[in-house]
Image (cartoon, rainbow, N blue to C red; front, side, top):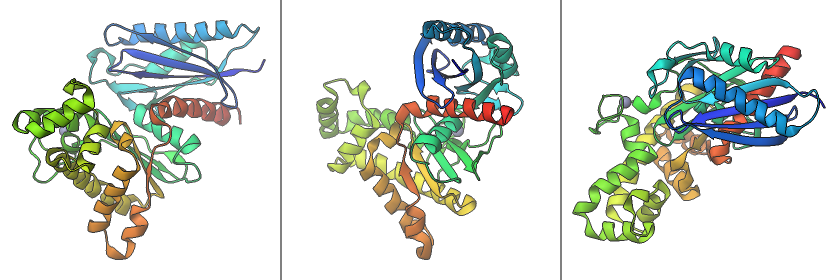
Length: 331
Ligand SMILES: [Zn+2]
């Protein structure tokens, strides 16, 4: 039995660890997960990572198998080159933690344990198996609880601790308070979570909209999703149309800026908002065409693509990174 790859993601505010064991060509062998009652501290996390890796190896039940390469994707500010966490917003005790080194020592992975942000991992996953196949220059926008971007240039991820923090670009006219303490930033207008929050906040003044939301959610407005808001906007609900229109206009400005500045071949839309589907992508493309240089408008808008892997993009990207790591070290 040849060596194997191990890839993991730490999500849900550092409480959920998912992992896969795969063959060197990326075929999945085993999956597992562990849920922690509060955000993992770094030492407890290293122990859980190794416990899960050993558990999956044991269940493979073959002699002499060990981990050649591994990678972990997590939501944190990372110095990926140095293998360190710079900061983790939801857990202060991770600051400056030498995560890659500690995971490598504890797991015994021959080529080490690479670390990567969730957004960067999603881009790697999409470029390996999804909407970014066949291109070497791409941008991925994660539009979920927050808004962030990842960049790949000539087949290589661009990595800096705060690179891609586009959720904090100010949107003209927007005034809502952002999680960072500022006001009117992109993610207050265009994250899936903000859209749901503002929509629910507007229900008290819009009885027809409230009735539609109750119908769609079976009476549980708090379960409303971004795709349901998009559906309401398409059916002519004025509140949904206003919120989605503002989100798409703000996104169109930022995406056009990225297209003009970086000239990517593809802009991959990912995360909960991208679940709105092709009609939403087309509306976003039309918003870009309206403001783009006319001679290039169609060509620029055609770079937009919906992610194809959904939430699985991150673990698939982490697996691709583990494999790259082994190949780059062993040649
Ligand atoms: Zn902000």
